[in-house]
Amino acid sequence: MKIATFNIQNLFHWDKSLVEQPIGKCITDWIQELDMLMRKSGNSLSEQERIRELSFLLGFEKTTPLPYAVMRRKAGLLYMKGIHHSTESRAGHLTNWNGWIELQTKPILPTATDNKARVIADINADILLLQEVEDRASLEEFNQIVLPKFNCKPYNHTFVIQSNDMKGLEIAILLREGYTLQTIKTHLIGGYNDLFQQLVEYEIITPSSEEIHILATNLVKQNVDLEVAHTIRKSQVENIARIYKELIAQGKSKVIIAGTFNTPSYCDSLTPLFQNTDVKDITKHFSFEVVTDEGDDATYYRLGAYRKGVNIRQKDYLLFSPALFEKMQDSGLNRKAMWPKNKPQWSIYKEVTGKYNAGSEHPLVWGEIST
Image (cartoon, rainbow, N blue to C red; front, side, top):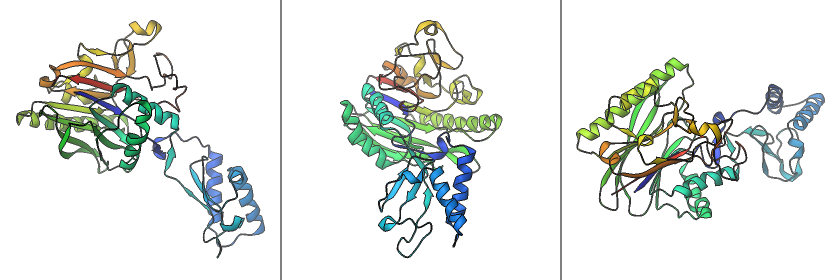
């Protein structure tokens, strides 16, 4: 049985709040001014001329003159062309509405989506845990259409749990044939301003009839100061540790904890798991292998990294209870779809040519267990 966890950072589109905003203050001011003018019931000749100027500055004059909505890759806007090639600056009885609305999401480059699939296809896990999936429809399209492009058979079962932050950061699980999802339970493990983080508990029956419990989460970064964020994360991890101990006490010895914690293992906020329970980090297993950095960095150990020669900050974890850790046959990490910003450098897919078509800023972590 091979299990993997991957923070895929969405499949086809991101929420705008998760993307670095490329627009400057001038464009922001132009958008606000155009919005104000378009909402007026009547415009003077000078105001109509200003609308045309702003449309030119924002790039709307480049849209095709067809009676359809045209999505512009310009500040994430949707520009509406009027019916019958109308050039009216305000709504009329023919156009009903003529203006623009702001989109909530931005598209991901198709090459980036392909690189996400390359990583998954290379590992081809039986149980695949994904963090930051935008929705079920996107996951199914990715599973049925994109994965087969890389000789990866679509997964037989997929399930998505919606998060409560409304930013498309859902948690998903994909299972191969023979693996049965028996039950799903969600736990609220704390948060900030009534925005509680979820821990998803899966009960899975393997083809050999073994019962495995998986605790999956994505501890997203909080928009608060570091001290408060540390306190929130430690409270969340304490709850994860408590749920893990309850499962062990119930005789459910085969437990896996997986997901993104967004902090290295030495951080005090993770001590409730690493010091107060018996879970084992897969990176500490003797079988854990990964293509190391090139040059001098191959013999270097950076604080907070996965291990010597794998000098990327550890944010993603695959933790096993002792009963499963002892059955580990092989394990590793795939970061070929990550773009190395600076040093260290590592081996990547030839299709990854920059940060915008990289598959993710996270590696895929996997382990294979004898069953």
